Image (cartoon, rainbow, N blue to C red; front, top):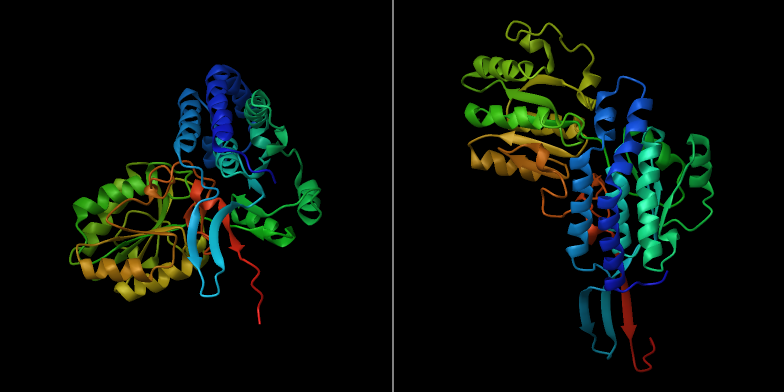
Length: 399
């Protein structure tokens, strides 16, 4: 694949910002068609589908942030000269061709493409049918930006395929594929992993937990839990589960207050049987599989644990490995929790809503990876490269 100079890539991104601004009304009009055609009662999916003026401004900002970042390609990781005179330099290099499969969220059409292109990768965009008109309009902008700078539109391709065609493409792609990122629910992820023939980097489910420890300060607990649950219901970094330590000195009052603050925000509470005579909810958990579920809805589950080790064991069993919180004033407990919880991000007295490329200083993100190879957490510009060794000699041979 041809390596593009940084100024050429940045010129494309500058053109793209201008096109997004110029065609804002067209983009919003296309999105309106998708919103009108939307069927079903999945509120989270509908919220992720919406593109308004502020969302277009966010798209422009995302492109600008990536444009202003240093080119991640060709950066020296190490440079050593061995005793035999060989000079070995390890540098960052593009993946090649990345495919992303995503549901709803037209902004992914911007963020995924801008990151892949700046990192000198081709990208294949397979958006969901519910965002078809929005995605087509945004890809038109991308193609115009490429043409305006004398580049092939093959750098950013939009795939219109149903499930059967997608399955066949994954098994027998018509071009080399180096990496696939499924960004959606568990069914999508399993579908891709089952059929893909190349590396799959999982942008996993949320199902995030908060552990309210015995020393938790209720005045910190409430705003953190309310924000994590209600700030953006459709976010993969939204809170779903709350464990309250039964050793908390004010266990019952803390439990009742958490429930009230959430129900005041129209969050439906389901609770373990230990809360039967404590909480207002009558919706008690009968099926323990609830603890595995990601809700993406105004719903939260409350349960009890007996100590820090119990909390860690349960969260590591049930969570999606995305983002988990401990609420405590005990620094040793916080350190133990953060070291032993197996997730991409761990929090102490702060909302899970910060697991986001922009909030974590990464800028635009391709996805939040819950895999451990090659990267975990927000996939930003620096994470969309691999590495390559350059070995220079003067005729050395291995004896």
